[in-house]
Length: 241
Image 1 (tube, rainbow, N blue to C red):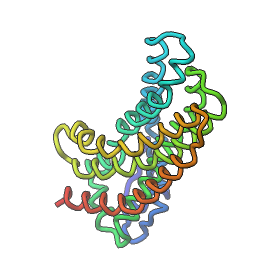
Image 2: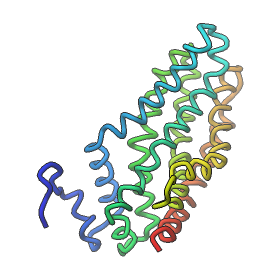
Image 3: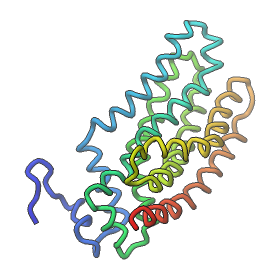
């Protein structure tokens, strides 16, 4: 086993070659390490989010009331599209080099391995988008109370985007134009998260309690994270057959 001179084989990557010691934790560490080695992919997602959100104040003009009114929808749609842009990182590279087949043959349930990959995906996509949101919200003149509700809604909602997107990405593995097909499959399923997430921010702007929207969003997150890893694992096995 020869290590690559540029990307040396570390202990985090060993389980990729030894199925007997493969665990969800090692998959999580491996995916985080590989993302850190390819920072351009991570920065592309973040810059896309920043650019899309920043275009609206420039195009609409400096009307604070109008900017505050459109902010919830704009920020959530931008986060949704940025999350969609990052979906190929979930399975495409592992499918291309044969790693995904080794993961499917591991003694551990594939659904747990997929869940670990989803956690790594959220830590490198959903969490940075959530942390960027308060800075981006300054462009829309959002009050501080609304900004925190926005952060809470994104923290609860971005795992839904990644989990649903994982099912679509798994179903389109190896297909030509798979990215477009993934978008067609998952965008309609993103609508509930978009409604509850943006609705929580709009409720706060209107002086209402956002607890109901956040509770529904949290329930949807639990439901999605319960069933999406299993569905994505089944879709991966179908794509590998």
